[in-house]
Image 1 (cartoon, rainbow, N blue to C red):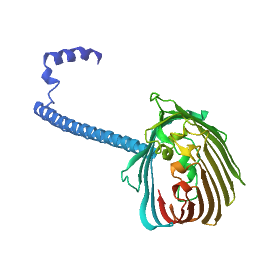
Image 2: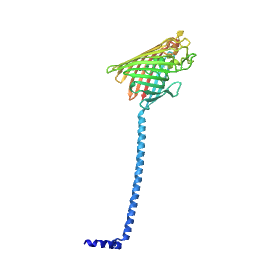
Image 3: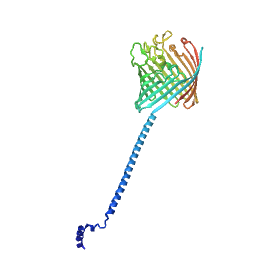
Image 4: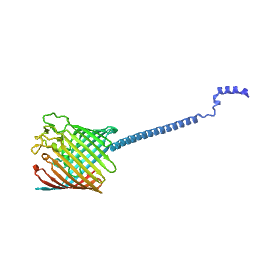
Length: 383
């Protein structure tokens, strides 16, 4: 059997048709064509699938961008706080010669606070108060910077500087506010730690010394301490201003915008809260007499001062307050010499309060020595 192998191989090489006789070329051709068609169809399907995947990828990217935009939008929404106040007042006033009554839109405030980042914040407060000036003004606009847990903060912009506490349970502003409230564009360094607080500020101001340049040379200091526990709250503080003439009401008295010499001011307050009882006391004074050419009292230079004492007690949702306020040597500023006040206030709905106040005021002899009685009702909404 082994001897037959070589002849067989030689025969196959001489005549290949004998080995491939069973192969049909037409069938092979047809099969190749079918395979090519199948390949083309599958290739087209693959291209279609790739296109679909690319569309899905683009859509997912768009969704991701939308989510990021919404996340950024939501993040900014969380950083912005909008607040407001609307006060409508009705009053009836009676003195020796006149009886008047009216309903007024006393106050409208709209505030926006933005926490730009962990350290920087911004605050804007728009204000309208009914009176001769019907405009909406930027009452406050400042930026603040905090320094983490150090307790230090820096505030720069238009604001009320820390001179006087100026709290009150009553509708009408206290006489201490007329001698202390000071608004200007200022730089304030504020520190608070463990209930203790302090501030120092500098500003240019509107009232200058006669003949002096218009510079940033006015300043103030404030220091105080708060104690709070389950049975009592206490807040005491003392403030200094290098120029009390900058107080908003006082400054209107100086028509020229100048004084012969700066007169410093001092403000001290104490607030005590025990259960339903609260007591508030404040005293504001110039530290020396003004030049008689600037502000007079009894023919000489005036040393204006004021105090405010209030006691309030809460009977459930109703608060009743009694108060007495007096000024001294403030006739040139046209402030009342004395006020006696009785007030009742309650919250009639969420963020909505109703207050009624009766005030008996006496003016200085130089301003008519009149007695004025005013009954005021206020409806206030905060948001």
